[in-house]
Image 1: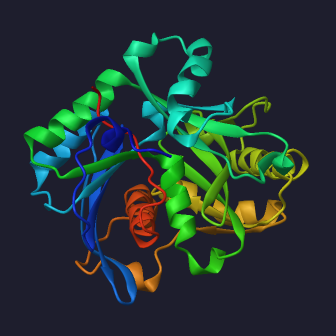
Image 2: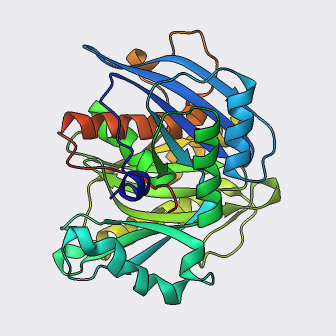
Length: 331
């Protein structure tokens, strides 16, 4: 996936062994500072702000004004509420031309004029859909909202490198979990009244689905019938995703589910999911080496998006920059 920020403005920075991850959601904004050590990544500092925000730019501004922001290169993860993710046929064009070619496919799938949005695209792995279909996910965000985030970075001296999305943050987490090497996992990310189910193998996203939680935890997703018990409905939705993953995408390597949430009630659903699913289910937790060294009590589920975009950036740097994830600044 190309970087909107770097592609449109080419404001590249020198590499660093310390990176700042920022996540922006309607009810929470936070950052975590991550240092790459000989033993692996380590969270050295965190800060979180919980209140209601009307936009990601407002969330970032409030976060920066609530505590000093480290000067390290920053990678921002937008909450899933701030963009749409579309699955489209990938045109048969060179990689450098993919983003522009996809714009015209997306034009008929969105209600806004193209000039009012920014978008970026990343291909599914070549073996998705048994190699018979060349598909891509396209992230579409409001141009004004992305520009506002970049403007805040300029105004408050945030060393912005990329703006990414939640699904790729989950992929970044999976790619750095030793227990998932050569294995696949489902990341069930819940935030507020919604979330996503992400099926990931070898650090690559193969399938993502959006879910919405009603009042009291009831779940609405896709064509599912309404069910009051959120655990029953979530388990059914995960199972249907696993079935689709095997029957249509042609993969069957999902062996575990990680519930990623900072809400105690939602984390309490994990045992019920484990009972109802044919794969192991557990709440996402930070490994011992990643535990914040500043004594932070920020929940692992809250840190996950910010940490994920940093881990993805570190993986990119380690591979020589062959794979960049993110969104970007508006021209």
